[in-house]
Image (cartoon, rainbow over all chains, first blue to last red; front, side):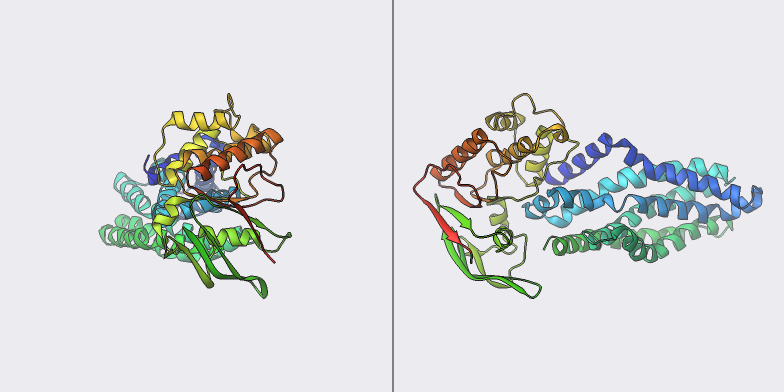
Length: 221
Length: 203
């Protein structure tokens, strides 16, 4: 088995063995999205207006929930040491871990979003744009979050520090992600926003794993 | 051949050790000794490449071990952490471990290795139900599976019973006879049946 595939295989297998942990972020996403109409107003026009922002912020917070566990388990039981010592490239192994993390915590949000969007009375085109923006945006969130998780690894109170560190970095993804749906609803077309999101994702794919690997090496010193 | 020259380690303001130098050639075994807190684990982590080297040189076949891929593929480090996932079985843990280290293994080899360490019939149990000693045995099984020349072992026989200690001793002896190298720390004497075992005392 190729080392990168082995990392993905192991992380997915672990997620299957601990289903409750894997389900947390999706259930959180559904609950948050369901609370907003109750708290603000069940008026259709209001719901349509707030939908992109609510769903994006929900997805953003939900993907943050599992970030703390991304490297913590491997750090505690020594698996991370073995990954650093592997003859395979560490950025590659870390990239595989991030991909596995996205498959478990990001992809379910993308799949859930169209169903939740119906609750906010979005039309078919808007739902399509929303799902596309999340499909480009959630991997970006995983990549940025992973860098934060690696930097705060082994620090006391890491969870709080992680949110303080990562949330400001999520702002561009939120602005262009939610903006894409708003632009589509306003009839302006979403391609500019989606292109920018895709560009940010490409930059993160190149630099994220590399930055994570550097931070993990420091954490293991 | 592994050669360590003038190696030192500083943790914050504390100087742990300085001027450490030793060599390890094929078939040689070095027992690193020293009191608690003297820096044995730090030294092993430096030699394995986990910690950075600020002063001194560690060379593998004449080349520095920093960013040295051929060293990493020939060295195996077993530290205090067992690198076993509680929710996976010993079998799965070892298969993934070998794959992540960049090598190939057949599942029969893993079964044989686990049986040699006395874990017959427990290959498919989740590691979380194994005892501390059994977990350590499963973790040591990777020595048999991975093809490495240099074994760096930090307290390999902690939590092991006398029979398992003897098995580890036989493993090390066989590895040394094959021309392998072993660098280890242990507060208990290891039953190694070899004349080429040297000791190095950290002050």
